[in-house]
Image (cartoon, one colour):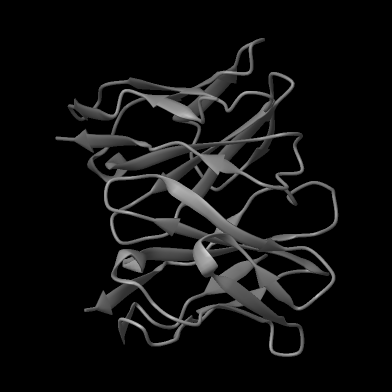
Amino acid sequence: DAGVTQSPTHLIKTRGQQVTLRCSPKSGHDTVSWYQQALGQGPQFIFQYYEEEERQRGNFPDRFSGHQFPNYSSELNVNALLLGDSALYLCASSQGEMNTEAFFGQGTRLTVV
Amino acid sequence: AQSVAQPEDQVNVAEGNPLTVKCTYSVSGNPYLFWYVQYPNRGLQFLLKYITGDNLVKGSYGFEAEFNKSQTSFHLKKPSALVSDSALYFCAVRPLYSGAGSYQLTFGKGTKLSVIP
């Protein structure tokens, strides 16, 4: 049983560019949450998707957007990249939007130069 | 707003000794508490959670955590540390009730545990 898978594992982008990160949830899970983990910090909640809708959003600008597909996989899009967007982006999946036990992927390391 | 404090950036312990990683939280109503571990260049691995019931929760790899409502604490413990326990540990909280703003996990900054052989 595959756990949460994220792609790509590493990415380097230039300031001002756009990036798309992808996440496939653990089998049987229908909810996906995205977190940003800056170096030396704990993960910060970006948003959560359930039933293909954004159900909750953290304190992130509109440059951060997402999508959930009918198969429950999800994308995180970041426009107009800033140097400060460099971080590990983590995807977590759970069964139901209550987040009773979230399983995390290995993350995508994004470096903006 | 909910918050988590992990007062120690780093904890050093000798192999075989007991370890404690501290966590205090602030949340509206009853808390739903978690501990996760992160190894270098990896995602987070779930260790244990507290919802209700017994204040001592047992989790993976011999870890346990003690919930103290009056002190709003949820300290992670292990009776005998292993070198392989060396990693970054995160405490997280969310409110137990359902409703807008209740599903997101709020994490502490993490505590680096080093177990010395």
